[in-house]
Image 1 (cartoon, one colour):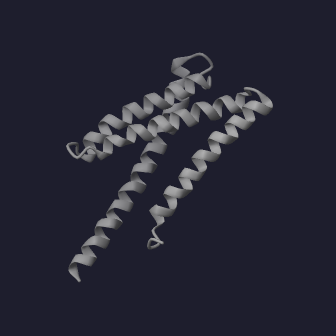
Image 2: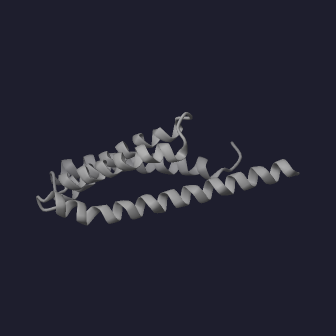
Image 3: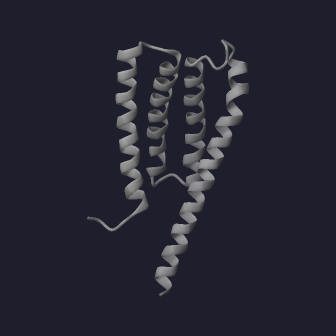
Length: 133
């Protein structure tokens, strides 16, 4: 078995959650039909997958983190707004949809990037400590 690594464990956790989500959605569809809750769940599962794929932009070594973020942020925002539109969060109004969703999208985006920054900073500090030994 590999040495214990939180990210290794997290990858397995996320894989399990992803498969469970898909199978629960299928079971709910078969047993209850397309309910409003299931519709929201499926729309956001698809939207989350798209946002995850959009995050591959950070793997491009030719882009700085800022450059990748400037591409990723509007595409992520657009994806979330489209999901919100399908879920009718704007009650048929694009302006209302943006007004309701944009603050939350920005807040979540900022929190995720602050956490990633802190994790990267901790990683760099750990590597520097190992190099200084």
